[in-house]
Image 1: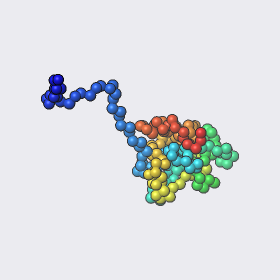
Image 2 (image 1 turned 90 degrees about the vertical axis):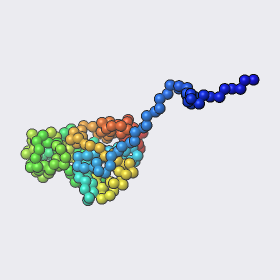
Image 3 (image 1 turned 45 degrees about the vertical axis):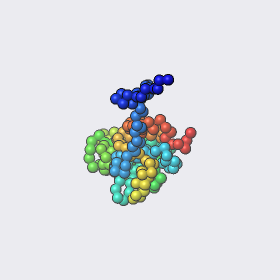
Length: 219
């Protein structure tokens, strides 16, 4: 019997059979931003893991962020209270629906007003938050803003975080910190529709999440 021949040491290792498969690309990490991305005009978007019913499925527009804490208003949460019934002088400047929006759980008997301005300026009861978005002094004369604003929203209450509180929630993955746009304040979308719109314009896996339920407690 002839013994099997020894492999040729110069021929190298035997080739692997082709399988027709490509090595899968690495799945990109889910980037939700950091506390450094939180600033006036940015958005805090509730992640699906956030199940607190106060904030599940919400989009929060940041008004202020400093060492004293963070303040913002929840967007896209209309109430049944008509602006004309409480602040009749301001109803003609408000965009539809002309109702108070629930800005958050803090001081719900307090009204905050945000306007998107056509012309910049700190007069006429306006205080800039970011870009074209201004806080409006509701004690001022609304007639002075006619022609100067594209529209406004009035919020009942606000959302607030004490020093260090938001940092913990961001580190836990409860919020995505993303850039905001002036039109977010005036958007006609509410609830899950607004959440999906904001998530859908992000990149990577955040955009994919736009197809998930905004509020995981609602089936």
